[in-house]
Length: 114
Image (cartoon, rainbow, N blue to C red; front, side, top):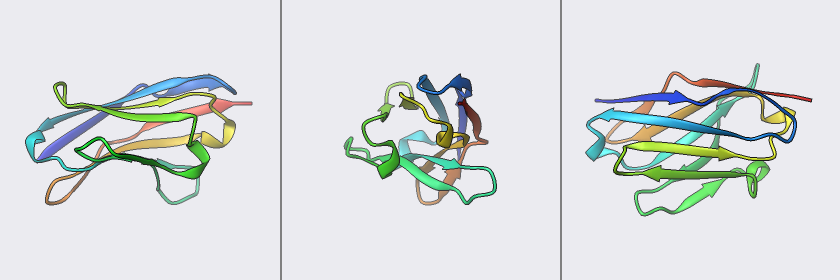
């Protein structure tokens, strides 16, 4: 079992920045891919960014150049640095990881005011 706890969400103005954190605990040695997902109001959950154990990353097109995903193995923590935030980035951001199964955090709300 792995537990994921997100933090760092909040309300910021258009063009602002936030850094989300996701602390993993439990069988963290078994974690393979980690990722951030985003769910806008009334929409399905979508991938924002993912990172492999080797550090390879990929991003959804709308956040390329603005968001950076990183992983601190020593702290078992996943980060998402979000810069130049836009109102359309508003939603709940979920941390995800995979071992032999999928794990999700509870989500953290991010709201960008125009």
